[in-house]
Image (cartoon, rainbow, N blue to C red; front, side, top):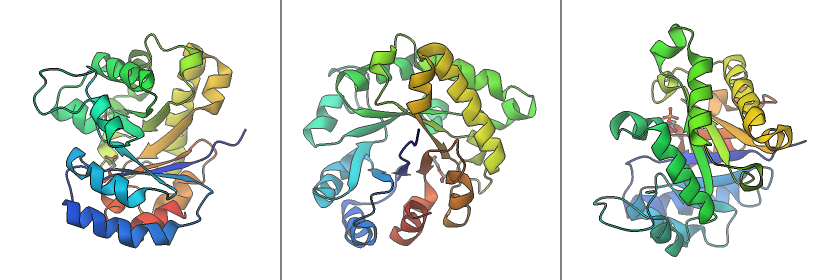
Length: 250
Ligand code: PGA
């Protein structure tokens, strides 16, 4: 069964509203009519209204880089799902490695966020991936299985259709080192097998698994062209309209 690829831009803590508007002005015409893949932009919360307004009526979706699991409350500095939905965000990243690394997000928190996102009908992109030491000590498989099991606790096959997974080996993020297409595909197979174990073969076959970690225009075709790789989560190379377009059109 063919899975439609999703090409996602993680802008991290970059761009002002004016820069985001300039990006949209240049980027949207470049990808107009591109229906082969889904496209989504993930700007910081302060940019969301600008980017959503710019992308309205286009083939480009907009989401958040992070949400809180609570509906609302005294959580200084956080963004709720209700706030995201009120500005027409449709997607959210969950458990990006930078959230795990710098903001102490655990698999348990990732799980709570996933439940909140599903409850509110957002499309969640759950990020998983091993750090360098884990890969070098042969722990990649067990780390991925633990992250997937933890993230999916209490998720049923009936609930799982919107979920997207991003495999992002932490040693490849922002470093210019990418997993080779075969390495990435092997990790994706481990993840898909774990999803099959938890939620059944049909859910696993339908679930999109993106690759992230130094995806650039010159390696996108080799990576996304792999049977097991259903798109990309792109950081650095998503900041410029030309390079992100080249990846979208891999
Ligand atoms: P990168 O970031 O493409 O700059 O490596 C990917 C990510 O963190 O999602």
